[in-house]
Length: 416
Figure: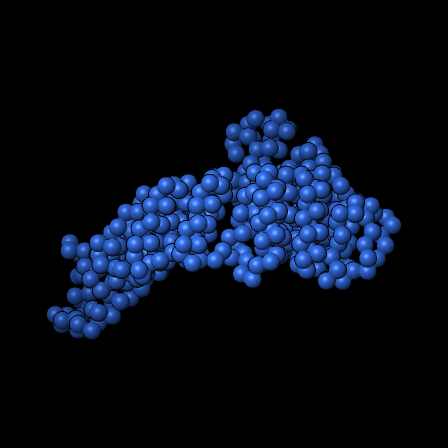
C-alpha cells in the first residue's frame, strides 16, 4: 500500500503484516427511618408506634417462629446487599459499619470472599492499618486464612507503599503449608518494588521464586520490562526480553507490547517506541486497536501528524474499529495546539458514529477551546456535558479551572 500523501509507506496491509514504523492512556440512598437493633444486637425491632399498630392488627396472637426467621433472613439479605453496594461504590467506612452490624447477628457468618473484598477495598482506599486489623479479627473469630486472603493483605500493603510489611506477610505465608505463595503473590510484590525502583528487591524475589519452584509468567516479566524501561536500564530490558523469546512460560504478548510502547510514547521517545514495535512484530505479535491508539497519541503529542494520519488510515484499511479512546486521543492532539476546527470535526464524527462520549472527551474539548481562546465554547461544552449526564470528577473540574485561568476568570476558578 503506497500512501503518497503521508510520510510513511506501507506494504500491502494485512493483519499479520503490521505497520513498519521504523521507516520513518455514590453514596447509598439513605432511608429516612433508621434501622433499630435490639439491645443485644440480635434482631431488628419495631418502634413503639409500629408495635402498637402491629398488635392491633394481630390481636394478642403470637407470631409463629418460622415467620420471625423468615423476617430475619430478609433483613440479612437487605443489609448484605447494602454491604455489597458500599464495596462497589468504594465507601470503605460505610462498608465497615455495615459489616460490623452484620457480624453481630448470630445467623450471619461472613465467608472468605467477603473478607477478601473488604481487604481489597481498604487497600485501594489507603487504609492498610484497618486492613490488618480486619485480618487479625478474622483469625480471632476462627476463620482459617488462605493463600488468597494473605495475597489480598500483601496487595493492600503494596498499594500503600508499605513494602516492608508486605515482605513480612510473605515470610509468614511461607511458614504455613496451606498458604504457600504463588506466582500472583510474587507478581504483586515485584510490581510494587518496580514502582519504587527497588531493583535489588526484585532480584531477591526472583531468588525466592526459584526456591519455591515458582516460574515467572508473562505478567511478571512485563512488569520488569516496564520498570527497566522507566529507569532507562535498556541493557537489562533487552536481556529480559531475550529471555522471554526463548521461554515457554512467559512469552511476550500484545499486552507486553502495549505496555512498552505506551512507556516510550509517554516519554516522547519515538525512535525507541518504533524500535520496540518492530521487535514485537518480528516476533509475530499482531497489534490491536489499543496498540494503534497508543501510536496515535504518541505521534500526535510530538506533532508528527503525517505518521499519526498514516496510522489512522491503516486502521480504517484493515477494519480495526475506532473506539472512544481513539477519538479522544485525536481530539486531545488538536486540543493541545488549540486547533478548534479539527477538534470539532473529530467530535462531530465521533457523535455521528454513535461512539460513547465520556468524561475525557469533554476534558479535551474544554482545554482545547481554552487554548484556542474560545471561552464561550468552553461554557457550551460544560452545558452539553451536563445535558448528556457526563459524570463530573476531579479531571473535569481541573479542565474547567484550567480554562478559567486561561480566561483570567478568578471568580469562576474560585467557584469551581
